[in-house]
Every structure is written in structure tokens, then in C-alpha cells.
Image (tube, rainbow, N blue to C red; front, top):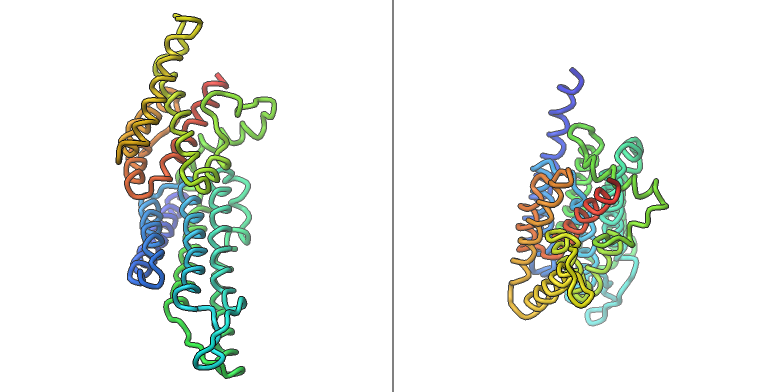
Length: 348
């Protein structure tokens, strides 16, 4: 009877969170002119909402919050450059930048970063982090802090210091919606319900518990944290390297290690090398070929994961959608799944 009572509550939480993220998306896109980077934030909110409606407790949620933190940083920079949002008007012609005015939006950046970290931990180490109730609500508390900070700042500037400074309804609305969304997401993640990526969780525990296994030395395995950082901050250079390495690895999986050698080189190793070079050049010089490469390799990863007994529900579909909307996300999802395949094969 307990499971019957808890299940509707869990569904309600993720549905409500999805509805709030849809509202946040429309809110961001409607304010595309202040600044334009809000369009990107609106797209990310839609992606998060889709995952929530689908009930997908995936690492991609954590990545979505990380992307929103980046969008907030860009918003802060553009709002200062385009609208002097964080400036106080001393005279009719003179305005001065005041770092204190950035406080509420900086708190929102921190809220998204904390949400990204907690979501990742809740999904990968559910049993440990699901009991830390106060920690789970830190993102919502940061949003509340931003709301209070902004309100107090307005009162002080307008009525105490007599400085002319308009209160922004859209910023207040953003703080409120974000706080509500975080609360619902965390309540949903804390509910046991469906298995929370049990296999992925098992693999991560294997990595932490078996230090003697140097997985990073195995072909195909790349530390996921390092992979995410390199994708986001190397301006596409790492992505090209990763395309070569991934094509080489997946081609090797398709053909095996190979016993026949020509001039001391395995025939199948040569196939892997030739395929990797060809695919890399096509991705560099042929427009949109990267999308085709991503979809075809995602299908290969899905097939190999199934062969290894790893659940891949919706993996290919999600990769196809994100390869068009947010192309930097499928490489993260694919590498995460490849790491599981490598560990599974190594532990047999």
C-alpha cells in the first residue's frame, strides 16, 4: 500500500517541476531582447522540462543546470554592457557600476551550480544523498536569498539612499520560478519510485571501490568530469580529438582485435585507424556531417551497451534530439555509456 500512495506524489513532483520549467522557458524567450542569451536559456529549460515530464532521472539533468549557470553568467555580462543594469545613476549623465547590485544574480549562478552538483550526486549516489534533506534544498534557498537580497536592495536604494533605481519585475519573477522549480525537482529526486540509474550507480561505485583497476588506461574510457570540462572550454578542439578516439574505439568493437597482420599491424587496427581519420575529416569539412556521425555512433553505442547487458532506454532518441538542439550534450551522454561498456567488459 505504501508504494501505491507514494507513486502519485512522485509523479506530481516531476510534472509540476516540468510545468514550471516550461513557464521559465516562455519567460526567458519572451525577454530575448534583455539580453539575447535568454533564448538559449529558454531552450535549455524546455530540454529539462521534457526530461522531467518523461520521468528521466539522468545525468543530463545535472548538465542542464550547469548550462543554465553558464547562461546566467553570460546574462550578467550582457546586462551590464547593454543596459547598465548594475549601475547607479549619480547624475543625469553619470552612472557608476556597483558590484553589490550583481549579488542576486550571482546567487542564482551559485544556485544552478549547487543544483548541478546535488542532482549528479542524487542520481549517481542515491542511497547516500537522498537522506540529506537540507542539502537538497540549498538551490531553492539560494533563490530565496536572491529574492530577499534584491527586495532589500531596492528598498535601501529607493527609500533610504534616495537613489533612482527601478525594480525589475522580470528578475523577481525569475527568482521565484527558479526557486519553485528547484524545490519540486529535489522532492522528485528524493523519492525512490523507479530505479535511479542503478547500473550507472553500480559502475560508479565499482570505480570508487576498486582503485586497483586503472580504468583510464583502458581503450575507450575517458574520465567523465574531465570530458565535460574539455568539451565546454576548449572551443571544439577536444571534440575533434574525441571524435577520432571514439570512432577508433567503436570500430574496434565492431571488428574485434583481429589476428591477421600486415607489416606488423593488425588488419582490424588498420580499419579502425582509417575509419577514424576518414570520419574526422568528414566532420571537419562537410557541413552537418557531425549530426549524422553522432546519430550513427549513438546507435552503435546503444547496440553494444545492450550486448553488455546495460539498460539504454531512450538513449538513441535522446542523442538524436540533442544532436540537433544542443550538439555538445550527446558526446557527454555517449562517453558516459562507453565508460559503462568498458567497465562491464573489463569486469567479466
